[in-house]
Image (cartoon, rainbow, N blue to C red):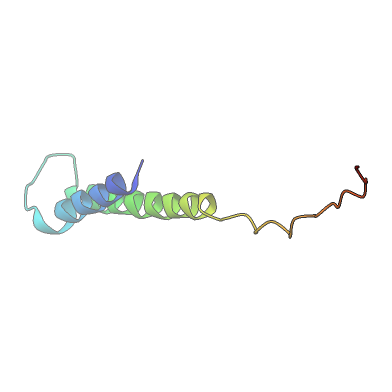
Length: 74
């Protein structure tokens, strides 16, 4: 799940938790919205953690070793 999907889950959960006044028998939409928001936040933190680890750059290489050629040619 990418960053867009996580933000979408958070938005859908907030809409269900705070903006909807529907009454569905056997389903508490506020709880469903809170669960979706929690999954979105967990997904966002996992995505950022993996993305941060992937973007670390290796240390710069050491100075190149210069080998001199001591052969004399005529």
